Image 1: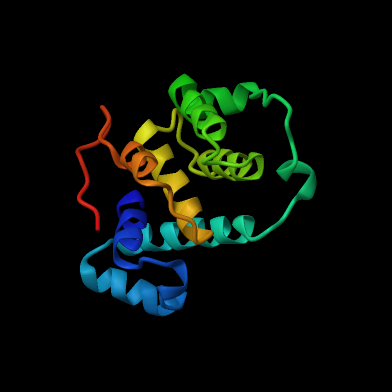
Image 2: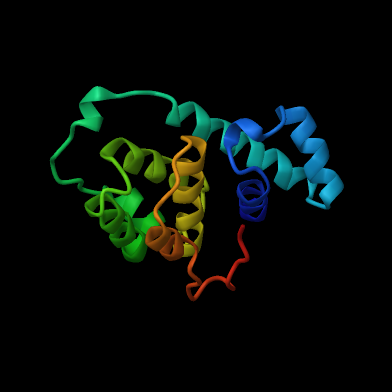
Length: 154
């Protein structure tokens, strides 16, 4: 599924440049992606888009400390939680965006979520909102880590 998400980011520079889901599924299938993975990726991306478009003024203005419950700690792991905190302190993520990242990571039903996958989640969130991280943050988001080989990007 994450290969599809990265492919979408690399192929469609803006989310509004993506075709409708049915046409996109056909294009992804023609490129060689598995139908089950295409379906999972489109559902995951649709849920991300729905969450990213919702405004929560209470969460957006939050200045408190975020405590992670046991389930979140198990799924995310210390490296991912630390990275999320780093992104929030660097003002790359707002509190609302942080909550979306956590929710999308929990939706994977995978524990622990690798740091590489978490980086793709963050990048897809920013992409879905039409935001692009600055060059240094982009390098950090797509820099290789122990879980992944380096990626080639546009």
